[in-house]
Image (tube, rainbow, N blue to C red):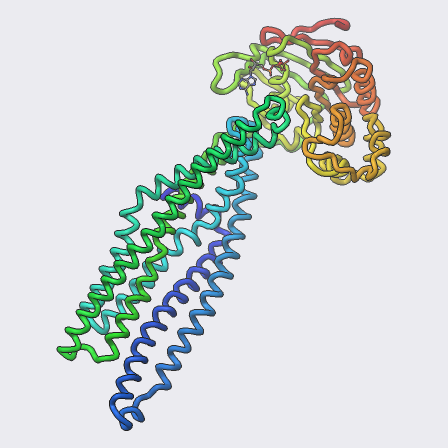
Length: 561
Ligand SMILES: Nc1ncnc2c1ncn2[C@@H]1O[C@H](COP(=O)(O)OP(=O)(O)OP(=O)(O)O)[C@@H](O)[C@H]1O
């Protein structure tokens, strides 16, 4: 139940509409019941009046019950239409509220997502949010309708015959509680298994598409397709089995309805003999019973939807409620003096790992300095960047920006002051313009061209047919490796940060091109303080100081390598 309460809290904005939708659903079902109930009476009463001769026929008031039948028929159509409209609107609203909430929760936990396959995360964002957003409509509404309308129909039936009322109550309980309990365990198991298969399939598929080139090179196309097909086949079989259970349960309810009608006939016949019931009341109760059994026919699919929703809620909770990788600051400073960076005796190791990456690391950089950091692979250079950007928290020591503790600064404040050109920069699907505007949304065309020019990319983009509007493909696939890196440089230049961290900026470029790139970055950002992490000698030619990170500590190194 905790999971359901959790989900209800999240979709609170759509609660009003859902209650409206639920009310319409109850009214539509009750109108259906009223329609059959009254029609049964009207047909039998009219037939009896016809058989009774001209006087009885003239005395029979056809108008009122016929108006009632028309009323229920019209009410059923209108309320069903209202239910679909309002309930689906509520579901769409709650799905969109939920998706933006999940996204907001995932942003500060983005470093934890590496523990999940990207297809799995995508699945949670798309299908789990949809399942949870719709669960009040798909899972809870049928239960609510069955409970409320079932009670009303039993009460109305009891007014005419206590025994008939008890029989209907028993049939509804068997159909609405007995059948779902009977198939419950099987339903839960199938839902769990289907979710696992769906996860695997989605994750495998996303991976296969992302790595299509490598799959072709490894001659693994047939194996990959066969493996995807096998998962899909298994999933298809499970889905069929799940559908079979759902249909079987409907048939069980239908069978209970037949038994209830037979029982109603017997009770009615007995009541007719003892004149406890009039002739038209018997078909009325029988048709009413058939209509009432419809209330519980959707309970098993609803149970399946509920099991799916609970699973989806749990999956969302594991992502969105995971502890933050960095502790939230007690007093967040929105601004700090970024003139100096001082690290003192910082000790750091990743959560879950016994290895200490930094063991008393100290560093002091003044505004305007250009510092190079070298060190063997695995020494902790990238980890150092992660600490400075507050993507990880250190265990002891201190890091201060101009006297403000790093732990009092949020990532947004840091990102306005510090630009990062990382090894694994990301370019978004879309145009050159879109990628540049992401770095600075208010940049003019002239500023974008200037930044491209500083990054030595303007000429290449001018030669492309659509200039700034050229589409670069996913991850900048339509650009060469060097062009993609220079576009990332243009983004950084456009932002004009006070500090810039370069992580292997010349990786993959020939020495001369690497030198040109560093020179153009420094020319475009003359006031910017630079911290450059590299294995390569070219960037170090532009640095004033070079530090070596080794054994978890930074050692000052004079001169060039
Ligand atoms: N997310 C992580 N969880 C646990 N350990 C990690 C994680 N990331 C890195 N490490 C470990 O931390 C150590 C330092 O890694 P880091 O990537 O900072 O080294 P590096 O100096 O940047 O290496 P390279 O020059 O090869 O990029 C390594 O032993 C690595 O295995």
